[in-house]
Every structure is written in structure tokens, then in C-alpha cells.
Length: 391
Image 1 (cartoon, helix red, strand yellow):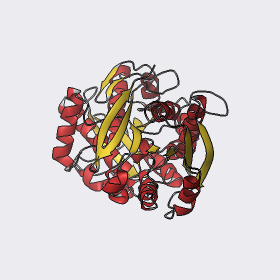
Image 2: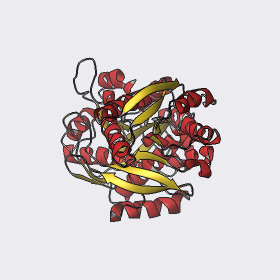
Image 3: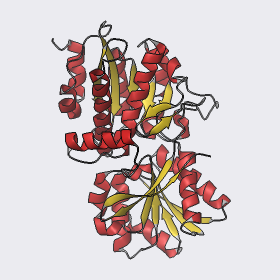
Image 4: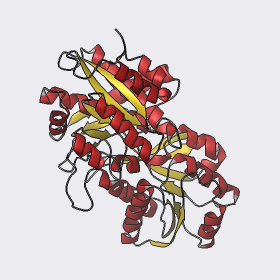
């Protein structure tokens, strides 16, 4: 079997994922009668490369599990991964390449800004996009119209939910009364989560006397940390991604700032530990999608197989991507079609899907109903604190 010219171009564009793609066979031309093609538009290089790498691993495992079980609709599934370089422009480029390849659906991007940027083109192309981990509400609901976006879905909780989870934890478990928020002004995710946390924290009687801004790829956070420390907060909330958060945690502790530092799911990466340093992770907490300590047998089986294959424990991005792929395949099976418009329609009807992260239902706004997990660190290892179930 030979690569089509189109698939070869796609593979070249996804050089960072070439090794992973090789394990799934060769892609066939669009319209093939015995192959279903799933696209992956992921942050495989750039500032959020840890997210995309883990997500692609999870997608490949989900697809391989399905293929071993006989495929879907009597067909095998092929993954085509394209690197979006952790950039909005890269995400648009990846979507265009995948749209040309005849994909049934696209999994990713992981980051909110990259997903939101694709909304108009996804609607024009009529290709469903399922973000494994994009949490900003604007992914699935157009803030200008209040209308649910027909072709955009997510396989995780939303920022209003994790903002509430972290505000509840801060006020209830940590007895915090005053918080300073450090926000990445280049990120829809960070700005949105900062807004929702602040609103919930204030509604619970807390005060947020300052919000200090930084930008992606900044490396010196001492000026904003100095301002934060001068306000003597009970906690500092940092809803950012691991690259900058790791530096913030390290520099804060080096400056003698010892108060609890909290954040969201963008912290979940082994790279955070590497950047921050194990000693500087004391008294830090973040909201996540899963815990390795969850005794769900399906999840534990996935963790064992993932570790055997990749030599490390999966992070939440691998878990939510595995479930995102499962949701796409479930929709193809339920709708008896791999045509993108049919897949989008079938996704809206998924209720109680048995994912490795738990039961998943897609609601009327194309969001999923799931639990938030509070995590901390012990000797550099992510540890479970508590689960917060939706009300």
C-alpha cells in the first residue's frame, strides 16, 4: 500500500508526529471505502508542545484499541496528525490541510485560543472539531450571539466550572480572603479562567485587589510578583500554561513568597516540574481532569498500557484526547456514517458515554458534564486532593 501524494504532504507538515503516525499504517485518499480518517490538529511544537504530544499519544491508543476490536462500521481508522505549532495561524493551516484530506472529524486543538480561531472555518467546511482540553466557553457558544456552534465540541469541563472549583477550594479549604491574580493577556484560556475565578471568589466574600498581566513567552516575572507580594494576599491564582507557570512558581519561591499558589488544568505537564523545580512546588494546587489515583478499572488499564508504551504516566491531555477520540468513533458508529455533517449531528446525541475519565454526556451547548479534580504535588509527583462533582 502506498502513500497518496496528499497524505504525504500532510505527513510532512506533521513532522513532529511522524514517528507516532508510522504506527497506524498509511493513509489512503479521501473517499476510500475501507478506511475512516480522523484528523488531529495539535500543539506538537512550540510553547505548548507537551499538550499536543500527550494528546496524540492518547488518540493513537484509542484508535488502535478500536481497530483491534474490529474498527467502526467495518472499516479501520487512520489518524492524520498535523502540528499547529502552538499558534493560531498554525491551527488554521492545520485545519486547511486536514479538510483537504477527507477527514470524518478533527480532534484538537488543545488550547482555547487555537480552537476559537477555527470556529468560522469549521462551520464553512462543515467538519466537526472536538477539543480534548479547550475550556473557554466561547469554543462551543458564540459570545456575540449566544448560539451554540454547530461544529465545535469539547471533551472536558469548562472554565466557569473550574473557576468555581478553585474558588470553592481557596475559600473553603484554604480559608483565603484575599487573592491576587496573575493572567496571561495573550491567552483566551487564561483571561477567561481569571475572570470566572475572580467572580466566584468575590461572591464567596473574598477580595481581589489586583490582577497583574504577563504575556506568553515572558521569562522575568519578578516585577509582577513584587507587586503581588506587596499586597500580602492569602493566595496567588495563576491560570496559565506550564511554560510560564513553571517560571512563576520558581521565581516566587526564590523571592520568599510562600503563600499557596493555585491554577488550572494548563499546569498539567511533567515540564512544569522540570521548569519550576521540585522544591518550589510546595503549597501549590491546580484543577485537573483526572487523577492517577482514581481506581476506575478502565482508567487504570489505560495508565498501565500508556506507561508501558511511552515510558511515563499519562497527563490529563492524554486522557481527555483518548476520550475525545472515543466520542468521535462513538458518533460515527451511532450515526452509521463517517460523513462529517452526520458525525456532528450524532455527537449532539451522546449520553453517558463510558470514557476512561468517567461517564460523558454532551449537553445542548456541546459541552461535557464531568468532575473537577484538585491536585497538588509531593516530591514533584502530582497527587490527588479531592474530587468536585458537578451539582
